[in-house]
Length: 452
Image (cartoon, rainbow, N blue to C red; front, side):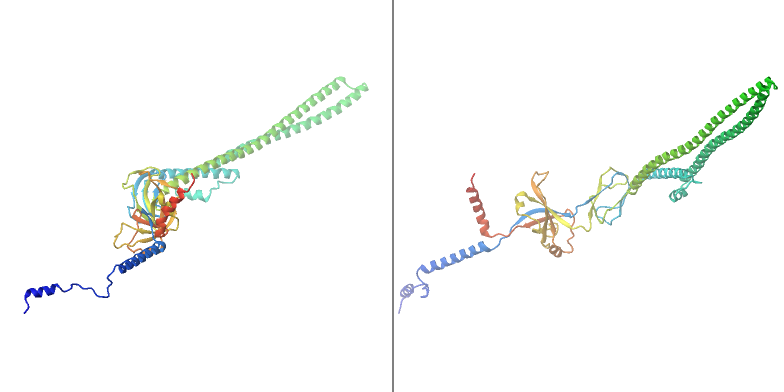
């Protein structure tokens, strides 16, 4: 019978964890397998590093902007606010009233200029009627319709009509007076001519009688005293004849002077009218321009939306406040304008940017878990670097639009608003791992072998 000590000894003598006979007992196998795994991994990495593209991007923070920028609503002259029709965020249509300015002064000035313009036009038409010697003043339909319901203009029209007739009457009276004087002079000439004929006949009779007495005296039959008396009468009659001829000549000269005065009077009258027409025409053009300017200003008292869009950045909120000329009252974001993202790209990254380059846009104002990354495209890069006035950093202003694919990916609830922040990743050209590793070495060699 075996004892316990013998049993324990026999169990200890048995071999423990004996390996199968198929497992190699030397290290050669493990070295070969490890080497193959290492070579395979190195080859795989080499192929991946040489051919697998790696993407990179330029990161930038941006802001949603309207493609054509906001439109500032301003007023040229400024004035007193009478009414405000809109608030921030309101959608307005083109031509909608935004702000009403007080028009008390402008209305009075416009009406005054209107009356001055029509008064000057009435004067001009009155003078033109005088120029053509019409029977009455020829007023245009514009003047007649303007004065129909305006008592002031109607009074001015009547004054011009009365002045027309008074001037025409005065001119006619002057003409008639000169014609009358010329006619009187010619009548006087006719009377002097008749006296001259009588004196001429009287001289002929006296000379005939004197010749008869002379014949008798030669025959010693006549009276010498009578002959001398006849001779004196002949001489006296010839003196009277000469006087009458001189008087006729003087009177003819007076008549001619009246004729000249008549012609000069007509010419001076027409010349005066022509000068008055020129002055009235200049005054009319001046008052017409003044009226046009004041009417334009009055019409602009209602500030209207230049196009459809949203009201933002309102700077007036109180009725009765004063607007200075050229002040910006509010901004209008056009409704149909496309939105773009404006970013500031560092100068070190500008070399890898170009127009048409794709970009990924994430609008950080929306829920990041549910919001998709939207595809964009670079549409413009500033021609020169710009300087941030606050930080002094240089940058290039880059504008990125949402592509059609990006628009299709946008949710209906994603309503873009100007000023909304955005994160932009502008995709660079894909490169391999080798190009990343070898480029610094190549650049270093290029610099080291360059002659100084």
